[in-house]
Length: 484
Image (cartoon, rainbow, N blue to C red):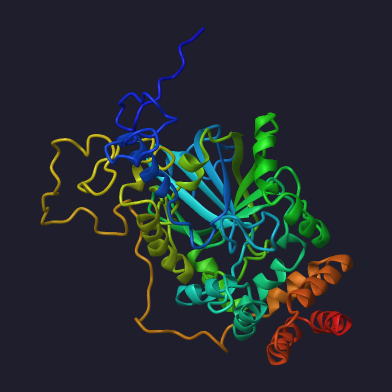
């Protein structure tokens, strides 16, 4: 029979008594010298790191990504270099707007973030279960998120705040239509698709760029919850999606997604934009599959549950700025904003050395001149210099120094696209694709969410529905009238 594990302090000092504090007499006051008591209470007060402002409640698992199709003509990324190659991954799913204690079945987009531990460093594909988003410029992001949170006076969720924002931002209509469709309440995380959502780029060995969108198609099949079932589960099992994912992996029913890409060359994207009037870097838009067919790349499988939720899921830190040679960015304004905001959030939330925590640590050698700071794990690079020598001729004349060609840019200014871009056609196309029953549920879901919203806001939003498709507006109007 093995010896029981000896209890110690965090410094490894044996704890003699974990049941009784040191006191001045049996009934006397406690003494400050009881360092085990003090350490235990101090850690308890600090055992919660700041909650994520968005994507606060999440679930995660480890797995693998395996290449099934050769796309090396488009990218020199080593993880994609040959069919059959396998890369370790970690995936975090989440709801977007809710707090950490919110229900998994709320009507909300779902985060779908994948960390690939490659031999060239970590690549983070930080996306959602929708191929589009509510806004196209990051300067609106704090305002948008505030409308999804709580009213500063009542501390209650507010339909008026949400619809006031959406009705003044017709660019949101495409995502709003998907949010209030059946896909707004997916049946757990295993039965939903994932998307990189943004336009990124691929760079090949010749230094040629193409634009790319990433897709993850569930092999389990799409399954969504009806509104009444989502509402029931909100009270019956607020952790429904977490439970479903953990239990499936524990029993060996490993969820899988087919990973594919849409690709457009730079000239092709420009021609497509001229023809359609849509900006290929606009996050509120999608690339229709007839214009850019999906090309298969590989399979993502989740096959190992975390041993400790806080260490692996809560402290997992993602940033779309983490790309490896052969993968790169685009002029997508929302992506450009996230390149700063995500890493900055992790510095605040987890700490300046968060990249060294096991779930975030690269699986390849790391060397740089950044030193010190809180929680500097390991050797802190020992005696290695903490500065880089200057090379007068320079070593990275282009891009990130990985052979990335320069992007074409325009004059620096604040460009207002309102009134000049089409925010209605794709939302209307999404509505027209829906089966009859889903159109009815969409209208009912929207009407229900508009309960208590001032009439002028409702009328402004109905005007957007009308421009997307007159039938869309008619159905919502009928549901609103029935609800009176």
